[in-house]
Image 1 (cartoon, rainbow over the protein chains, first blue to last red):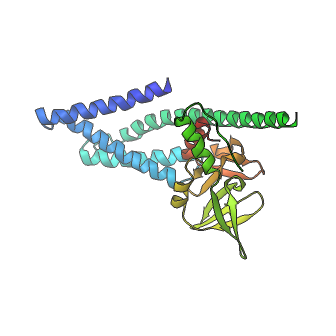
Image 2 (cartoon, chains in turn orange, green; image 1 turned 45 degrees about the vertical axis):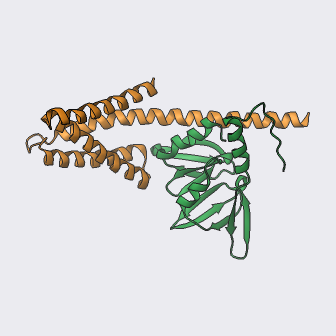
Image 3 (cartoon, chains in turn green, blue; image 1 turned 120 degrees about the vertical axis):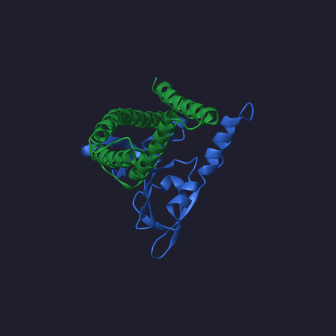
Length: 140
Length: 135
């Protein structure tokens, strides 16, 4: 199910990007197309920032997400001000948007980590059992 | 050591198996103050980069290694060695358990009771190794 959801998201993003890119040639750079391209650019900047945070910070899950929240909000606010999404009266919305997205990511990440650890530990147990069985057979 | 593989026909699975067996032969030249030692892959517990110097840890010894982390990473494909953080490569042959400790940090416990910090970013890579049956 997880793979289907992930593939759906990736496919949707690709479809949107392709459709809107092709549309540029037919209808030019409309506001809608520009918005989509800006969103992709913002996602790219956040993904690059996230990559470097992962690479250079060894923090706990919660501390890591707090740093990400601050960094992502700063990027979204700055980007939003530059492209005209936010005004001084509604800049607080950046905190809300980023908070919702990160909250979801936090719970998914936590769940995934637990599952990965369970899988690895069970594989180690299986390996140990196989080695023990092999030793028993050798003795026989 | 001689390994004989019997197979009905040569396919990707057999080729993969041969590659894995060939990889068992990989060794590293570790240096101590007064000698240079050839260390087989199974004897390695982990390799750590400390202030741009590489150190190789076996069950009881520590050796200096030449080279850099990226160079080393290129040579460990298809082996039981996997990167677990920006500065550490672990041998999964000696991994006893991975656990989540306080503050949600991840820790790898080795079979000599040594504990290594695992970065969340690399957890999927460790899982992938076990999934592929490389370990």
